[in-house]
Length: 86
Image 1 (cartoon, helix red, strand yellow):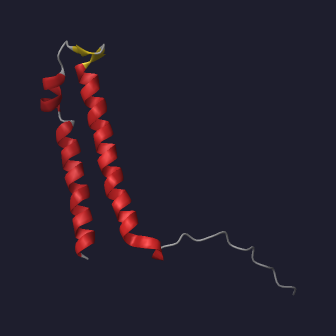
Image 2: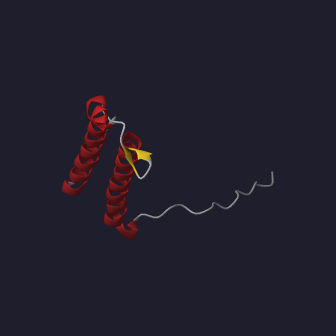
């Protein structure tokens, strides 16, 4: 139960972090006429923030899958049901 609450807290924290990173007051800081290797700084910031959030979310979800172990299995294909002769 403790692990489930911790994972839920991590996902909520990622959501809050993503909301903060993508709010206009922070984005305005990077909205400058500067280029980094020919890429506008604003676009670079948005892309890197997005990639970072995806990577962190993948790490949390992968940790959830690893903690569940092999006791969870996906159902296989079902055999077709036979119709009884009446």
